[in-house]
Length: 109
Ligand code: HEC
Image 1: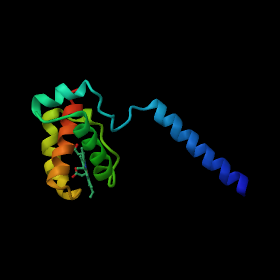
Image 2: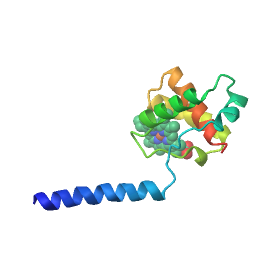
Image 3: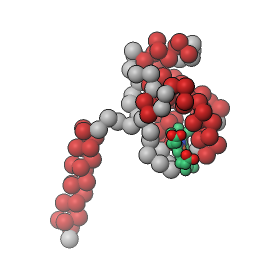
Image 4: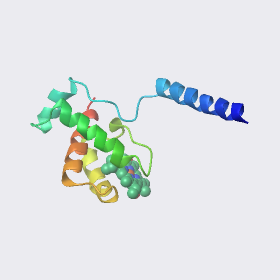
């Protein structure tokens, strides 16, 4: 019993590791080359603000469904999606602004 539980746990860990290696992460981390792209639309954007947007996206938007990749929507489509999702996710103004900055910017990659 103990062994099989451990075996299953190990299998799950290995499976996750394989999935992680094979798939594009749903919420890619922002990198320095994203910053100038972000600044075109959000002049006060920094690498920190983009990373904060990603953290908020992961914590506020992944509860009801899987996280959607930023590239799934055109940059201009995200604000409209956020209009409908921000009430559901109970976003504060700041959450919304940061998440929008992150999604719109990474959708341009
Ligand atoms: C309380 C649950 C809930 C939370 C929290 C939530 N969603 Fe959703 N989301 C849904 C449901 C239900 C659907 C599918 C039905 C629909 O589209 O109305 C959906 C659909 C979507 C879709 C696919 C539809 C489309 O327009 O492509 C996207 C993208 C999306 N959500 C993004 C987000 C983002 C970004 C956040 C965080 C701000 C978020 N969701 C938070 C419930 C939620």
